Length: 252
Image 1 (cartoon, rainbow, N blue to C red):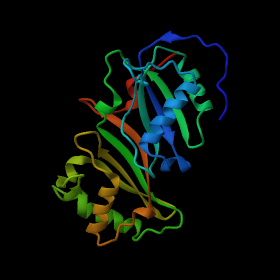
Image 2: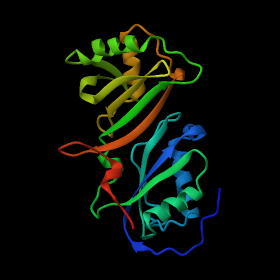
Image 3: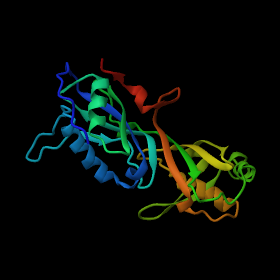
Image 4: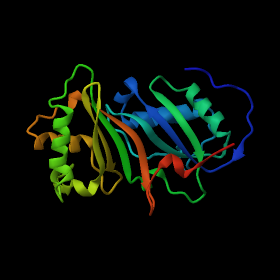
């Protein structure tokens, strides 16, 4: 890790900050709790003027939008913090990236409106790309998967599957939770693109969705063969889905 630049930067008084970052490479094997501890240390090393809670055991005011499962890479991870003061967005991004390890990269650092809700509370959807890892072949052609997707998901009015929860099983309708699902070809192999419901109420995992397609086609789903990559996380307005990065503005 490199030391943070010691140059004095002009600071402005702000409160709520939304940070977007990428997670890739070997860091995909680091779980959510360890990522929280990692960012807590990074805030101190980057000299981010983060706020602390009050009481006998003060802690940094920080929350993540949608915890990422182990083994999943992402270009669209978010955490919210509260800050006493802040340098410019670019200076803050640079300071954080100077203390980041390979596999984590801060993309943006934006000021939120005063009464903005936390990212965790407004998450509504997420984009995913699922593709075959090196050394694994697809069990069917791209054309066969396109036909299977049409028969399984596009044509039926409802697509009922069973979702395993921590305490029981739940029957859900994928037509209500999958907002987009299409297939493209890359290097002769199919790549699956999905926009799925996310958040604390209606949340569906991409592995479950792809596994259901496999089952409908009489194929055996091998989770080890598939790399799941999250592309973006969204909130929802009356008109459209809005990327969480669009909810703030740069600090100049």
